[in-house]
Length: 274
Image (tube, rainbow, N blue to C red; front, top):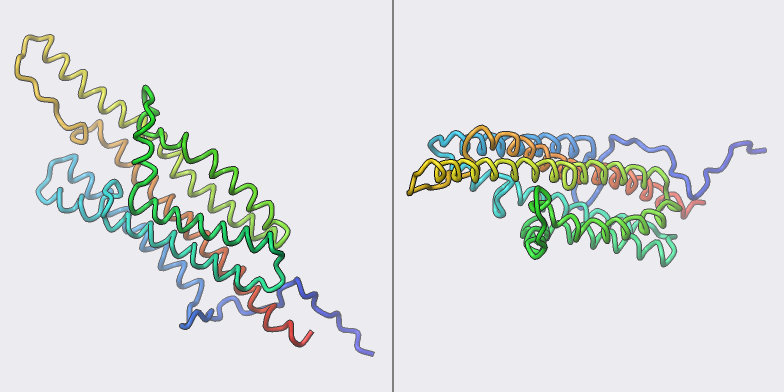
């Protein structure tokens, strides 16, 4: 009598996690994630250096800002963040295709999630959230983070519904994706609000300096750029942290989705023999 216990179809068989995945070319997940992390950190450091050069009014600061600063729409950092999010969207779609036994509602959840990542990619490269946020007027430091009131509530609601549906497919998957969300929002919301308060304070310092000059009887007063001087440093450091977290979130999502894709591929390969 054969006493071996059959492997359930819903459970991924043991597999070599170091083996390459096939997307038309060999991809080793561990090596890919390492490269993504190194490149992300490097771009964050270069952005920080460029902004420090601008704060100190050093030669070559403006070209460095245009090319590396995370605050610029067409910079390398912005395009990299957009590319990461687009990759997450594409990978999510591939994972949805690998779920052969998924119900219609689960398939819909995967497709909406993939579309959401692609939307974030488009938003990142054209700063759509900031453009729409300008239509909302708020007093104080929240003036520079007002887009959060427009985007966060509906995005959180949609994400909760999707994750609730995917929880039935894999608890580990949802926990991993949620970790990526926490890291991503730590930058997009947490650090953003921190940066907004320091930007507001830097602008207030400039306004008070100009007002003090007028009160002293000066007639020709030109406000200095708020992005110059020591008051700008907390903002640029916070911005570097913000964009680093916003890029590491997608890297976590890619790692989680690659692992889940490997498990589903192994299940699909074994299913004809079961």
